[in-house]
Length: 99
Image (tube, rainbow, N blue to C red):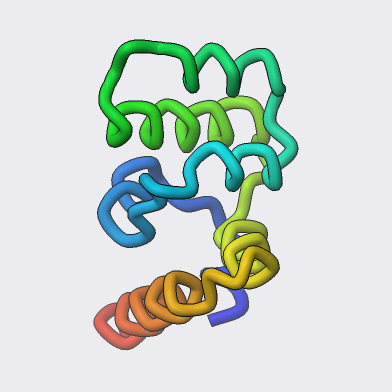
C-alpha cells in the first residue's frame, strides 16, 4: 500500500476514482498550484468537470513529484475523510487484484 501511495496517479484515475468537482479550486490551492493558473481555470467558461480535469492536469504537469499520498493527506486535512478513505480502498483493491 505504501508504494502505491507514494507513486504518481494518472489523470484518468483522479477523474474516475476521486471525483473532486465540488472542491477542485480549494484542493488546487492546497496542492500549492500557481494561483494565476488556478484563477484562469476558475474563470474559464468550461464545465466544472472540465475545470476539475484542468486542475488535476496542472498538478500532474507542474509537480513531477505529485503522489497519491499528497492528495490523500490534503483530502484528510480538508475533512474530506470519506473521499480519502474511498480512494485508499480503491488503491488496496488494485494491490489485491495485481497480487
